Amino acid sequence: MLSCLFFTVGLATAFGQPSTWNPHTNGPLEKYDNPPAYIYRLETSPRMVSPHGVFISYQVNVDAMGNNIVGDAANECSISVDPTDGNKMAIGWRQFNSVLSNFRQGGWGYTTDAGVHWTFPGVLEPGVFRSDPVTNSNETGTFFYLSLLGSLCENMYRSTNGGQSWTELQPDGDAGGGDKQWFTIDKTNGPGHGFQYQSWDTSTCSTSGSGQFSRSTDGGITWMTPIGVPHQAQFGTLDVDTNGNLFIGGEGDSNNVFYCIRSSNAQIGNQTPTFDQVTPVNMGGVLTGGTINPAGLDGQLFLAVDRSGTATNNNIYMLASVQPSGRTTTDVMFVRSTDGGLTFSAPHKVNDDPVNPSKWHWFGTFSVAPNGRLDAVWYDTRNAANNTDSQLFYSFSTDAGVTWSPNVAVSNAFNPFEGYPNQSKIGDYITMVSDNGGGNVAYSGTFNFNPSRNQHEEDVYYVRVSPTGGGTPTPTPTASPTPSATATPTATPTATATVTATPTATPRPTPTPRSGPTPRARPTPWPRP
Image (cartoon, rainbow, N blue to C red; front, side, top):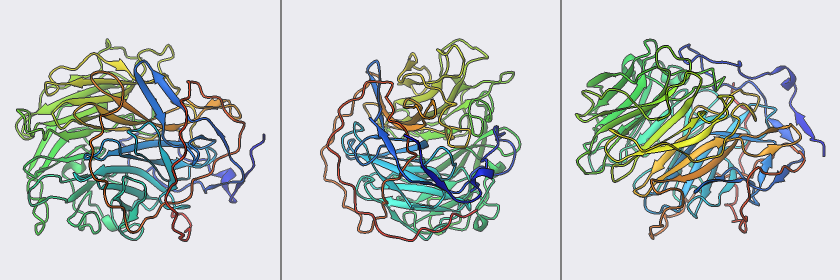
């Protein structure tokens, strides 16, 4: 069957982003440069369920019937887990309705059975360019979704029903911000309880000026005037210790030095946050981009704090895929601080294969379980003869990162160069959230094959990892969160019509589809430049 596509005038001359990118040069990549692809007809294939040993990856971006959407693309995924009920999770991602356009929207999916089956109700705001999804959950299971517009301004969304529907908390763009933003939530019992903090890189929203940090004291609805971050640190994440101190990790804009930056008064609502501790950190290399992920990062810096209440409580950890000196490829490197960020350990290589200048260990990310265990995952090419086909690998530590378990592959190999949505990258990051039993991972892979394009497609997957292998968490029976009164889900996105594809792994039975929430009608604005 032939694909029938209709595009707005000018698509033929809009070629998207450059083939390679240097993260140490200024200029945002999250920009509107292709109009949306209007789809006349779509095709589907069975959703992909991809076992690898005891680990099983389940496709997330499926249609209303639980099938793969042929001809679309989905990448750059961020996962949230309800801490009161491990069955309930949500993942946000960049949704491309057609690989022939890099016009992207805010996609999301949710699960109520611990990740075995997923529902994709649609995008946050149909026809509106959105990128860089970041999701998080507070301690009661309310989910939040921070989404970047083409203007580099942002919106925060909230879900009180496990990600089934979302409420936009302010008019489009009124959350300030900038490119490659990240946020965290204060989940302590201190004065900053419920505060949200976000930081971003040096490409900012027009209302942010040169600021790279902002705070919300009312649950993400309103945000303070942005302020600067020492050394313009960027491409990192934030977290809060049990005393309410905020920590920001990032790499200096122009000096390739990593920093751990503390604000002890961000938790005081009537004070403008100040940064009272700035510590240079040796991560054993620098962040890179434009290579195995041609138009994106090879990984960003992740910072997380131990809040276990054990002997490791308030340890600060940082992990990143970095390029060591003299190398062109990356390793997953880890450091820790046991004194509140004053000093850090020497960098420790988490990937345990012998140093090989041809092998990649990229998109490294990690999380800290409530009991203090560390879980890390990354893309790894150690088993690839071509040095680029990648597998998701996993390792854990039960001694604060002093030692790490033998690395294990948890996914089948995939070609990261296929399925590009007219934009030569598979996003800029993957994410995970840990509980006491294991870790919940959202990542992108190219397991589904599209015969009409003779290549595989980028899709979003969920996999459960744990020290004992795969499997799902034991559900914690709790009352469900109260549903949101106002929701903004949209219709299931369409995709390019193609011949039905045959999955490359054995599919599992698809359950009876769950009904999604009724979409709220709203106008479709023209995407911002």
